[in-house]
Length: 301
Figure (cartoon, rainbow, N blue to C red):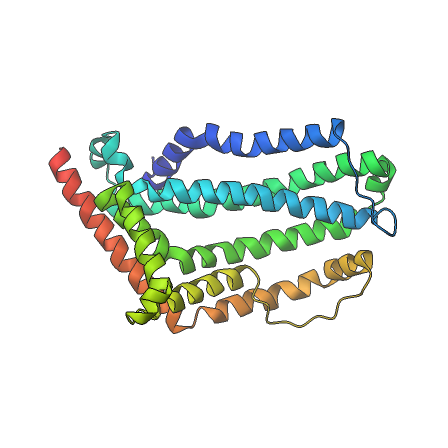
């Protein structure tokens, strides 16, 4: 078997139940609330348009599931540095033609990139189901069936393509913080995260400014802005209609032409000293993780 596929299969076998629960539990709770709970979406002007209700429901579904899976993936990724030593599986992986770098990179890519992207696609489907339940309660199933599904599906594909292109860039922007947290956890276990959190807090506070550590808040701000602009570059100015339903339709119509320009804007943001410097820090942290794993593996065998 290909070593990369073996590492990916390991993540699937070990985390499939947790991944399933992260998606199924919120979906079941939301479905029960929409079916049996009290639903009130009245506004001062009456009921919102069906398209606005459907779009809002899909957006909430995507947001909730992506936050849950992303936070879970981040926590898991931070603990990857010590996992193979804790369960003694490092001895097994050393018996295969798998390098220490690949043993770290593949699980990180699975938890930080692959699983969130798959979740985004599932969340779009879940949002469609939740919109059916909501519209059936407040306006009838006919309102859901009369939605402009051709435009909705086209916009969903555009959103999937945009996230698919932007999410890896966002992870790269955040990689210095993620890998620094992994390295600190490898060195000092949970205390490493405490030390890192205190160091970042002090560096970002007034005390850090007095001590001359102004670079810490600036670096964090650059990383945060870069990560956000990876998903939505915001380089385009669009005049939207005032009515919600018309604004949503206009957005759907303009989505394909907006896609390329927005991705291009995110790619252009990568050509910045902050991004290059962050990659250098991430590479040094990753090198430290590989060396730590190599030394730990040599004593484990």
